[in-house]
Image (tube, rainbow, N blue to C red):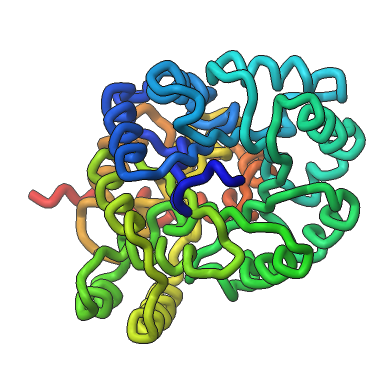
Length: 375
């Protein structure tokens, strides 16, 4: 881990897009800014962005910079292997797509109660440890989206695990559905350095209610996203905070925040506590837009976008959300009411959201009555 320069990472899961394709030119510019600012940690996975993320890693990073300039994390995702014999060919494919000979970190991806037995039965952890012995992986870890009890079990079963990636932000720290504070304490007890994902909760903590923004604006300058990232990076055993950024502007802003990192001071911490309570009072859908739910949807419903529109309607009460719902995100017939209740989305959701019932609420909100246009 000594090759890591600073505690801020580029999560290549929410890259800038041109239609359904990654904007490689803008992504390359983002990579350039990131490296020029002294950061070098990149994170990807085979399934991100409909399997385009690893391609972007090669086109925008590994084909353009020498291997010693960056630290690269990839993941083993359960849906891509059925038996142990499938793992090594998948791993080799990931190396080739990314254009590297080894991964600095290789994580068992999105560990939850319904996929951990599959990883055990296929000896996925054992295979990753073998890859480490062979020099194809420098460090083995896991990313986690479940209860403290399951994390305790995994770390007891596999004490060789070196790092744990958890969702940690000021909204989820003591949320009973996520329990990230407890997960962090378990990592500390087991001596496992923590990688933070979703410090801005999929953008929720960048686009806060007006009352919350006024509180943050009353501080010493800085953006809502910046305060969220600094909150997560301020924990003692957190060695990396990963942010998924979808524009050069976001990259420049967040890199600027973390270039000379300092934890939140007391006044800022108290302000964040007030903001947390304001956001919770809004009762928003806590979707992080990871898009795991979209790949398996037989109706092609863009679930994260519909949830985002629902949240914006709740926050701002204007006509824009209605317009975008009807004219942009469901224009091809993929409305919330088109859900066939198959449940694939809920099995894939790391936030354990009741997506089917939430889509019913979205349909009731946007598909009842006349559509507002703002004219």
